[in-house]
Amino acid sequence: MAVGRVPYGRPPFAGHWSQPLALAACAGFLGLILFAVVASGQVAVLLGLVAAAALAYTAWRWPMQTVIALMVLLPISRFLSFAAFTATDSTTVLRASQTWKDVVLAVLVIRMVHDAFLRRQAPRVHFLDLLVVFYILLVAAYVIYPGDEQQSSRTVRLLAFRQDAFYLLAYFVGRGLTISREHLRQMLLTLAGISVVIAAVAVWQWAAPGMSNKLFDKLGYSEFTEAVGTPHEAELVRSRLLAGGELPRASSLFLADLGLAFYQILLIPIAAGLFFSVRRGLSSLSSGFLLLLMIGTMGLTVARAPALAAIAGLALLILASRSFLRGTWTAVGLAAMALVFVLVSGFSPSQLSELFSSQESSALAHTELIRRSTELLQANPLGLGLGNGSHVSILANNVGTGSVPAWATETWYLQLGLEMGVAAIFLFCAILLGVTAAGLIASFHVRDQWLRALTLGVAGAGTGFILVGVFHPVWAAVQVAYIFWIFAGISVRAQQLDAEWDRTQEDSG
Image 1 (spheres, rainbow, N blue to C red):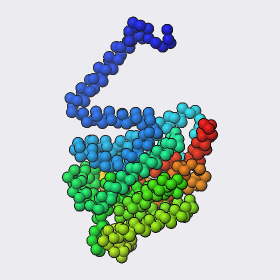
Image 2 (spheres, helix red, strand yellow):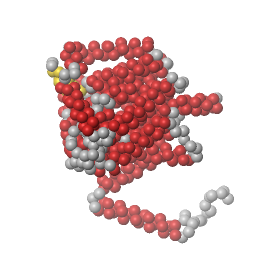
Image 3 (cartoon, helix red, strand yellow):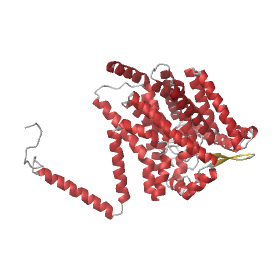
Image 4 (cartoon, rainbow, N blue to C red):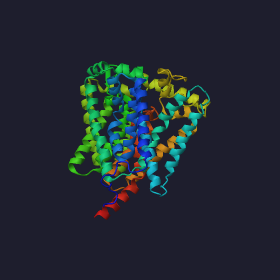
């Protein structure tokens, strides 16, 4: 008789007589819980728990496949929340749709720690790892310490922790993920694919802003912004006022023009990294098209600081990769798109130059906020507490859970200083400069084209984010932050991965 096979005629429960009794008791207990939930009308809560459990199991069981799926789901996560709210008209469902990515990220981090213990080998610790840990601990300490003002509630401080630090856990996902060359290729191509869809929607919105606004209004967009606590964003496609009229600002599936612009700061260097690294004919042509499409999408947002930051990141990549010929072709394509933009928009170059005027109303408002924030930081070097001076305060006051002044400085660094003091500014700057430099250095040493594209992309995006953070709280767009920091974690170990993949290829050959 084969080992482990149940003999013919043996009862299904061959162990102790208490096993079927225990299973019956568990089934009965679960049945009572299910009956109580249904009887109390909390079916939505039950479904939410089941969905959360399914997400957690999926992320735990298939971490690499989950990360690849995140390349599609994260850029359109706000649109998915809008669709869920429109379909159910439930604020509970809306809140659940906003937190699913946090659940997935937390499970992925736990899985990375679990795998590290199973390897029974001390992980290679980088100085950047320690900086990230110290920063997260600093923000966590301010969840307990309310700050000098002592106005923010615990709920506000937890929301601010999510905005200021939680996304950095994605860095450790990138650091610990078991990844192959094919996995990295799938991640980059998947991200490129959804970016083409996002760009197509942006073109439609810019070409037909009235139609876009009417369609989304009929679907309940204004009710959605009210429910998420941003009633001031009730118009999907906003306009930039110029002397000769209005210029529409595409928001695509991000449902926010600035969010889309922040995404392009990441995607333009990623596309450039692919274009400067891939040498084959069709792949080179498609990556060049992707780069021009991402640059064009940035232009449709009419966001000045993000556009300039993205150009700076792109210039760095041209110099670092020494792809001067392809850089020249990119400049020619950019000039052609700019000419088409001028002709189609109906504005003259002199009218469009108002966008970059320091006397424009939006620029003056930014300047005033920076002045006010600087004065407050000088008076409170240890910070006012989490939530002060951030968009969390506006959100919390709009939904009725806040107790801090509803205003936000439009500068990420000053926001951190107002919340947690000067030390937080220097610590975060050190982290961002570190991952940017690590990506740039690794790009000179890796031979794999996908790793080179990724490291160049992280270096260019990091440069852009460093600059745009002076004018905008860029990391509040957590769907962008999650992707960047996953890539940053991978780029820190890029040289190690390159060597491992080469050894694997030699062994298989």
